[in-house]
Image 1 (spheres, helix red, strand yellow):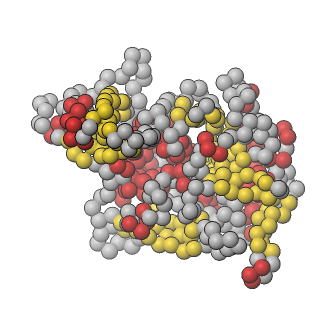
Image 2: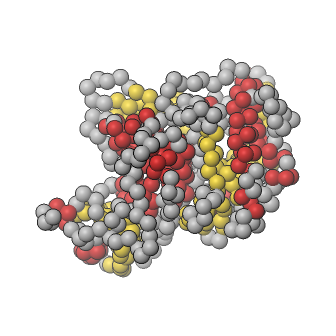
Image 3: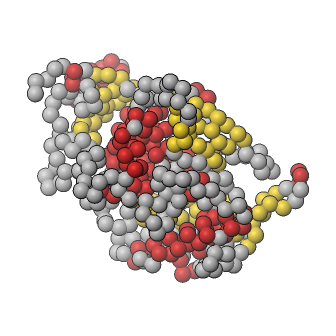
Length: 471
């Protein structure tokens, strides 16, 4: 096909869009001490690149990425320093090679399957929603780029995402985005565990799992399931028991005894999709089980304060012992990583913020923020348009992938995970008998839902997630 000239045309793009592409880099879009000065793509997206500015030297450098024949991004050129951004752009325009054929596969590499080429097992309603609705185009673009950024997806990844394991595979994509966003090297050199993350000499092996029910397509499109009305049941009953059974099932596989894992930090990342909407309210059952502490409130009026009440067993029908982290047999488990944001709603917002905005689509996110005022027990309400200046101002760099990521540290861990290995997460740890948290975020969303609204007066449609209150 003749080159029409369009594929050679350089277009400025948003920094957030380039950062989504740059999740394919070994350490994601992190270039310290330099920072991104301007970002571009060629034509319809066969190549992209950025100009970086090193503020200490006052010098500019360039970085160019091009698509491979399987659409994955590969780094093709870095150059500089240049004294002016104009000189850097001249170089970048050459190195992106607009109009050239895609990059070839490395020798012996397997061509990555197309995400939207339907396999023999058909599709799930969740995948159909992702690929067949204009309102979820932003999510489709974000999911696609995260899939292309996976170092080595297994042979069943695409088929699973298209069918009943949609939630589990989406959670893996979410974890990859969280890790790469924070500058972590992410590898998939072994079949299991799922990820090895590393930075500055520290590392951790991570196995991902979802707490599902025994029914097919658990947690997918369907009637919204609300939390148990009884608070004790919600914290220490069936939701906690489900976490316990899922985690204990994974621990029985003895990942820590594998040659490549032995003697190194190991964590399990878990998300709850056992019912439609369960990720909204089941989160607070997890620390109850892990630490053997139920979060209660004592006192009245201004004297109210949060306390931890020790529990020996969960109150579910199996009476599972509470306090996984109290058991010395699990000292090889460094931490449990949790998030309820590995959902279409999160991917839709991140794609929307990166610039994929179908005409007429609006996103309104409303919920509650954690009030960090000393002694405060009530949250702060918010309702903001995604993409507005007010929404952007909630966080120093706008909404990030890792803001809903939580790390629950095992106080008995034989190989602890350094907090600064995953700096963007909220870290929970035990000190003087109390469970405390540390986070870099001044505004932490406790609970939210994202409404979609198309031009023409259509009613807002729930999409995405509601994040559960922390105890």
